[in-house]
Image 1 (tube, rainbow, N blue to C red):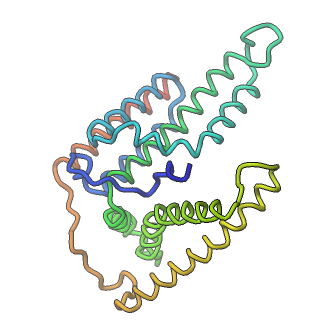
Image 2: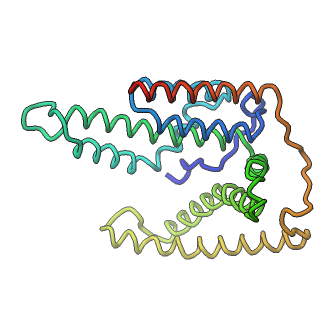
Image 3: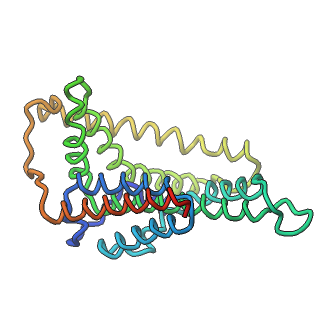
Length: 265
């Protein structure tokens, strides 16, 4: 299950999506999320599916890699579907049944919304390196510096968090394997017993995380890191024609989503 968590991973490539400016990709994902929440009918959701499929085709990210990250969310998706299925009033599918046609429709839409939201976000991290993502976020949030918002510090923290997710997952898997070799059982017993069985995992994992953070802080201080003031970039970000074309396409997609919502489709 831990190996199925792919958030924060970057798959290098030379596709048109990989070559887009990170600011462009961040804005496109924001437009995609807004349009997804604006969808009320199946045509609106179909438009979001079409946008995701187009992004997958252009980035050459296989559906297997993209949907692999959904496995840890199966419980949340199932719970969301059950709540909407059994607690939505309307016309019963059969006389005396709790399940209604409206409940089925709402449950399917909510599940589809979660799946599209997660996979669309994964598509951003899969095609954008953590450093490029940090630079893009910092430039987009640059106007906030006028109100003394710590833009650079915030973006570097987000970048480090994303970068350390695969490392912590690998460390967790290693600790679990070591504990199982010592006879630990994490899959049997009641809820309380399983919770207690997690203590031998959580304690060394937290200690390891703090040690890594301390080592990282020491390395940054030894290299005279003092925040974003006076720092320069090796690669300067510059919007190209393909970025403007992608943003225009995103604006058209957003306009279509708004129109579909106004018409209730």
